[in-house]
Length: 483
Image (cartoon, rainbow, N blue to C red):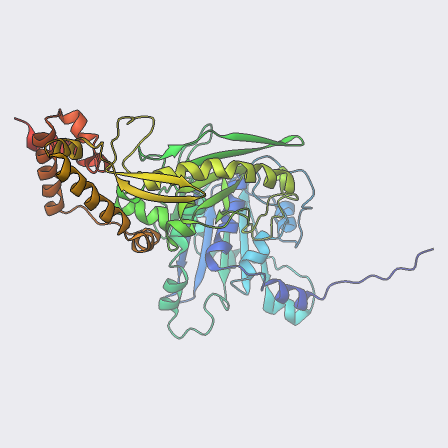
């Protein structure tokens, strides 16, 4: 017979330890939004204020919880992570509501309405410390009614309200609560817009979800810039893992010259294009991790336009090593090997987009570059002026043989003196020279000169380098040169 002894976790030690899981304010709020989405909410309101008693409140219009369901939801480990979940469920460990909330505050109250009845439960860490027991408080009705957004919940047919109070972690050491609250919430709107961007727009059979933060509705963002006509979607892949399917859809973003300022900011974020290349992992459409190659390849300059959307179902959580915060995931070997095989194909298209930013192989096969890349062999390369460029050829044909040789010698000097290091450094900075009115005037003048030199029609002129690099200005150039 095996001798056993019960070992009950100390409530004070365990709760205080779990507060240090590593949530930021925005990831903690996102975890609560997950619960609202799992409850089929169509509207989620997030409000915060520190003018008097600082608070953060999250209200949804989901299906709500009955008394016993609410009590269970307040239990640490309220569900088994190995249990089969509904396909749309964004939870896993049964810890998010508690660990996310208590990472920011010492008092967390949940009020839920279902079938016309309202019930409330509260974790108060000072009360737990005083009693040294796992005790949840059932707030009195007058306490509930004083909570932010309670009246709005009461007016709904169903829903759930979560209120954080006693914000010791969120407001730690602050002498100016309002300023501190504003500082801590600086990235909240952008973070939620990014993580839940596939929920805030209608997608397939899913209706759009409204998320409002202090009266400001989340804007739709798209890290793949699919609305930009220069974005190149590549052939997708389906990877079977047992009974589950992982969907892989690669995109190659446009060159910087084809992005407006808003798209440039979205494409690069705080880390630039180079830092945000790689895989974007979605679990049930919720963005979990992004901008990584999982150490399959290093982040390189010619990969920087490549972004691969990977959709995984929640049935593969254990294989992907998903953490409590749902901010870390790592692919299993079977998927990692398939992704490694696909990377060169993605990267080659990205290389072409960077090398020829004005060229679209499928739509502009007549593109005539001014420079051409030469590979003598053994991995070496150089760039030379393309003497078949119509403007170059027209000028060369007007010269006698000795002059042609002298011109070719000058071309060779220019090619040898091409400042590769400086060009590479500028490309890595993701900066581009904006087209000003003066620059547009130069393009118009260039088009006029090319037309006079070559005698070609305007359609052919527009396919010549460098004019082909600026298709967004072709209409203006044509208008200016129209006879």
